[in-house]
Image 1 (cartoon, rainbow, N blue to C red):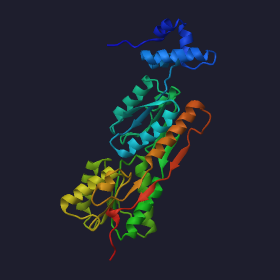
Image 2 (image 1 turned 60 degrees about the horizontal axis):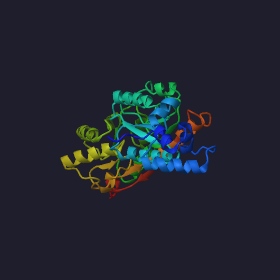
Image 3 (image 1 turned 45 degrees about the vertical axis):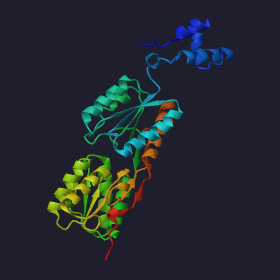
Image 4 (image 1 turned 60 degrees about the vertical axis):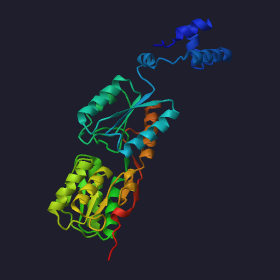
Length: 341
């Protein structure tokens, strides 16, 4: 294997000291422009790359931002990652993405790994199993800035970037009612998650404002995936013969509902209306196309990165326990547009 050239190798070829070469590569104003140019030219020819690990050991931090997401296959999270990378790249940072796979134990391992890698800051969205921020305190105790997004924790005094979940939960149920649906069930996520609580509260408020009863049997907590939606829809259909709409906490759950309704021969939206939440690409190509909420994941990622970099550059610049709301957008498609006779 070809050995990576070192500062010492460059210095010997140039007839300069190692410290002079190092300063030249950093565009130090005390080094002559000609020396900087010669040094950079040789570095490029030799394929020299700085030893980031050695530098991080010296400074006790890197130019790396750690990111923790529940999963990457969910397009909402990949959109957030794109937004984060767009902002951090401009400031000279790279990102290190880890995923919990919706598992608390793996999320703890992710936090440990990012600390070990001496990241400059962390942006995270918790798993569906996470109920408190104890493990994230290890990050804060080391003076590493932390920003939470979408799925956040109240017990951590850190900046939080969230969507307008209550408002859009309210808006989407109002739309179902306007479309003629009256027996509207809700497939919620794990009850301890704030996105579950806020979206479900919007659902309840819409029912109340339209003179409809809130019935416990119409609300079911499920896992945040297709299997959760499939099994949840099956349970609802057994208990509620008059069910005519299912509002889902996210798009994967709604896709599972589609699968169950297709299996039992019920038509969407004629027999049962269905709505999701996230605006995954599948919602535009599935048949019928799915009504959902665009959470503006890219903008959420950009905002999270901006706030994190503000913390890194000046920790006293912003309020640590401030919540920032990214306005989302209701997208009405075929799955909820039943014609009213």
